[in-house]
Picture (cartoon, one colour):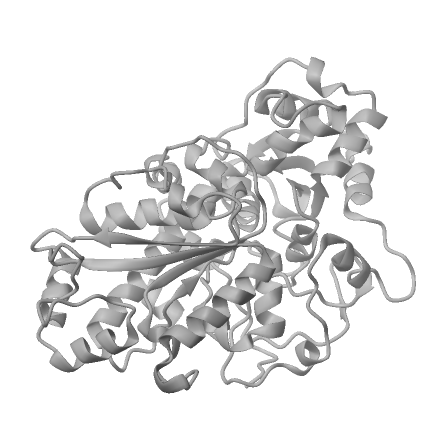
Length: 476
């Protein structure tokens, strides 16, 4: 199922300009990955500039001609309708918002509780309030699984494998915009998983709608996110899991916008009582909180991937080597699969290929012990993943340049290229404090879904949680 998806990637050409489902004619803003069939860039990407700030993206997303109402105003318009005339209003809140929202009320970050934030949204008129941590759990479970599937395919088919390695995370719209404009050849290396926001939006418009017997057309999904780029991500035309023209996420409100709305409506967040998140999509593991920190996505994925390969929990859940404000952080994770496991068999079989030993050694991406298979420094059979984290898009550019110089033997980019390097990069631009040490795979997100919805593992993996790309308007 996963392999079929990864082997059928297609390119999507988005004409310029486009008409969004909000009814405004807008300049398209790259906020999610598209797949390529060759090294040429689509014309509309050649003629656009990379957008590196929320302010720039606001200007680029402005409608051509008449001014369109901002996301927050459209959300309030729907909220203010009489309850019997409006849609079912559902909100989701990103982990970073719970920390930063208190600053809108003159308090230190984290001074207000998540329960108070949930209560404030209910007082605004939302019928249900979900925690995007649930979507983060889904993202990491699928992203970690996708990484392992790519590694497995690479081990089985090397040196002629078409499975792209390293694998880059796809959660940050700014990072995706950088790749689309400046590094289009790296698009196949991006994970095909949707971001937590879009995964949870898809689940609300499909799974929850069916469970509660609500038409997806009668649901208004509003996200509260720390970054304005999430608005452009939600505007992408292919995020319509429940049907053509039915957006997975209808509106996106930023942290600052929510703070202003609460104050204007007389809702004093610090004085509110606490209330919980709604079920069944309101509970996530604590590991989702690290999504808001530099390196958090990569760290969370490694926790899951490590346990899936070794059948043991990662000895140190807190990977301090990839945290902090340093521009580029690198470390190594050693994974030793147990004897008889699928990865154990693949590693043993791989050891018989002497030519592969030489190729990996010359690339420097995988450490070998003279034909005994993947090897750690202590000589134990296994594999060593080299991981890197870039803090900010400027450092992401530096890291990409370093990777290309490092792995391309003889200075020929794209020949041996990035396929030889087992590296997992997160380009996440938020920097927020977190102490959570729980793993996504222990949160039970898939278990909850598999119970009442028997076909969810097929429908969820392909249609809901991955970027299911259109096959028309191809650019090849």
